[in-house]
Length: 125
Image (tube, rainbow, N blue to C red; front, side, top):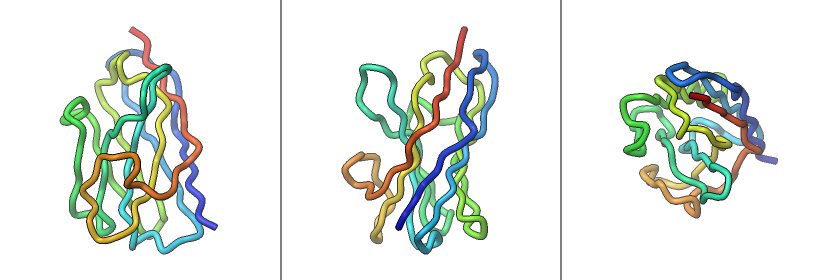
């Protein structure tokens, strides 16, 4: 059974940093692409970042480019999201997700196959 568990969320001030983690189990982690999405209250779930199975390729939403960094450690079955210069607009529940198949480059929710339960990030001004 595939399981994704996010951690590392919290309440911070604008300009602070946070590092989210997502631990995966029940699968061969090095063979799946991973992504981070976020959902603010009353809004749709939006793409944040993605990383290929081998960790070589990444993709970012324009709103986080230059501030957020996605990475993974296949030996630890974990994907990370390093978030710097946080803004109140970054407040949301953050979800990690996995994508099967060959092509990693997707920002669409429907292209991801399994999801974690989410971790809350709150940024105050």
